[in-house]
Length: 66
Image (tube, rainbow, N blue to C red; front, side):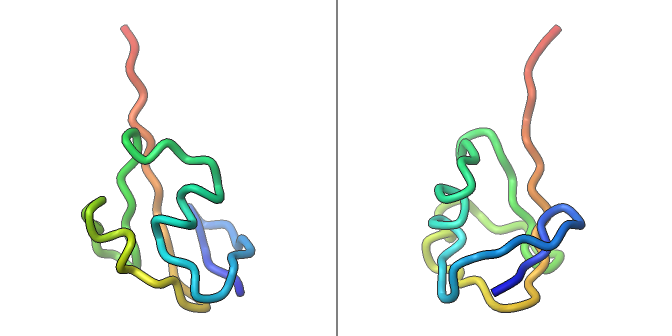
């Protein structure tokens, strides 16, 4: 299955939850915000969001520094 992440097509396992996708891609959950199809998804809801063919994700990573 293909989904779009930050404007790029990526392969994803069919019926994967957003929480599983985050883990599979190696993203640090505590350092990102995810928007799914133009809606920001609360981290507590990731496990309930099942990805579908053609979904569009925007993943924003927080970076600290000075």
